[in-house]
Image 1 (cartoon, rainbow, N blue to C red):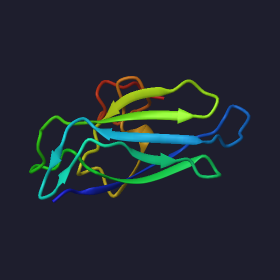
Image 2: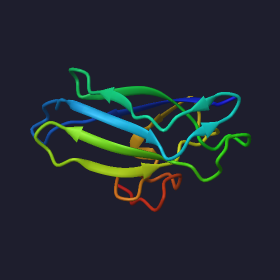
Image 3: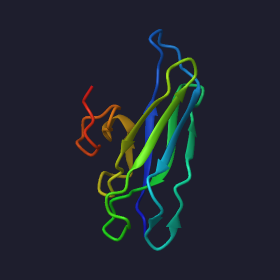
Image 4: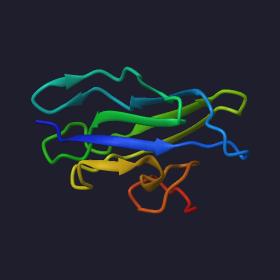
Length: 120
């Protein structure tokens, strides 16, 4: 079975105000590990404080197929350019992780779990 990980993130505008918007997480392929997860986007709307919290399945569990899968993250923050990048959600990272710690091809990250991201 899949390991479930809670992904969080706090967004602020340069003024310190909380933005509105939605962050989407889409698996790169059909994920299979006891159950099947289609590659449908999971929406994480920002709350009034500009934060997200979303429970996602890790895609590195040893029994998860296909190996090498990832999530495409699309940040749709009101008034800002849309930003898209990919992340891996490791099964052994803990029960909660900040999105900035997952890395990404053109996003945030410092943990090395992303696909070539850069640090803050």
